[in-house]
Amino acid sequence: MLDSRLGIFGLLSDAGVVVLMVLSVLLSFSVISWAIIAFKFGYLRKSLRESKAFLDYFFEVYNVDKVFTESEKFRHGSLPRVFRSGYIEYRALGDKGDTQHARARIARAVKREVNAENKRLSALVPFLATVGNTAPFIGLFGTVWGIMNSFHNIGLTQSASLAAVAPGISEALIATAAGLAAAIPAVIAYNSFTQQISVIERDLEEFSPEFVAAFINEP
Amino acid sequence: MKNAQNRLSGEKKFSYWLAWAAAMHVMVFFLAISFQLWDAGRHAEPKILTVTLVSLPGSGASREYSDNKGGTEAVETPSQPNLPTPAVKKNASQPVPVPEKVSVTPKQIAVEPLKPRPIEKKPDINQALLRLKQNVDKKMAQLPPPSTTNLSNALARLQQKVKSEGGATGTGSGRGQGSSSTGRNGEGRGSGGSGSEDSYKAQIASIIQQNWSFSNQLLKNSYGMEVYVRVNILTDGTIRQILYDRRAPSEYLNNSVKKALEKSSPLPALPKEEGSRDVWIGFVFTPEGLK
Image (tube, rainbow over all chains, first blue to last red; front, side, top):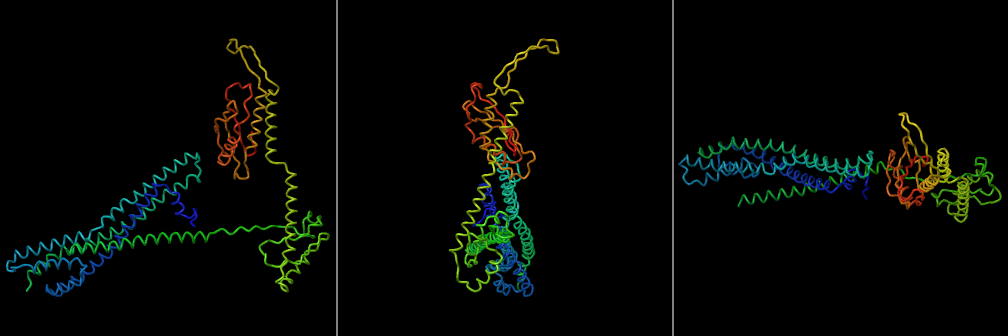
């Protein structure tokens, strides 16, 4: 059905084993990075939105019990999660009279949850950076290999005409194109996600002490 | 426990997105294929229609057909097999004026569309084809075969060359003494050209020329189209080695030369005068022929 003249698919059918391997690696990179992009895009957007809504409610009410009840609605937000872990620790305290001790324990619980949240936020994102950095070079490797083969074939046929040179180079360049196609979205997504994660981390750093203070100073 | 559940749910979600990404890639792949198919279909070359032109008798016909009284059939293209044949009734003795028949045809189609006459039509086509074949054969018979012409040209050239070199008649040897410019006595020894060698060259040139299938109409440009080859021939006539001294810009010409030489091997055995050693013989191939 597919004619060999049909564009890149015709070129792919004539490509060598190494070029095909490079292309399959790049294809898998592309699939995984797009899955991460889609997954993280939804996750970070939800986290940002729910954190903002939770903060608004927190400063509006300032009653930790009510805030805790309300925080159940924001299960995907980072700030509500941190607040909940602090609240659970606060309720687990037997002697609330020892303020220093209570503050230290709540702060420790909040800190642990902040760390866990940071890890959760930045999980899988480094893979995007890896794809963005390595995919063009992998593609370039395929191209160099293809051109090497192409020149070898030119030597065998003893002809340097354009008809003999061009198809091999054209096949080889597909690998570079595939590398760039995998790398460009990965780099764009990586930059965007890094910026969003840094915003959430800043919020966590700034509002964690507020949560601890709210538990200690609860009327 | 809760953390483990969260992690499991996160992995599930990620697997879902992984499947989604794979599906998207497959979809993009198929979209690209369909786009290319559509694009290829858009730029598809038109179908090649084979049209047979047949001269009609009458004042507008060619002289050949006008003179031929028996050839009055009109041949229709086979693209309209269902149409009833026009009312061309075969009359071998008299040429029937064509315009009248053409004017009658639409009327018959309109009045009696369900009366095809394929039986009358077949002999007309066959006769016309037969006549065309005969004409072509006649013309082909008049033309000398091109390879023969080239061969005779090559032979004539070689004969002229042999004559001009003065070695066409047998073998000869010479010996002379002279004084060089430095005052020393010099001695020279030479041998005349061997007639048998030249005839051998002519013979193998004719063989190679016969085996050379090449059409200069396939060359876009004839500038610099010369192939200089050297052939190493063993005593039994086998071509051991072919060396290109100069290649033509056209690979078609180069390959045709190589094929001709390979096809010609083994050549006739070398003449006895050459002894038991192999010889190198050079040829120049041009689109006009072998030199």
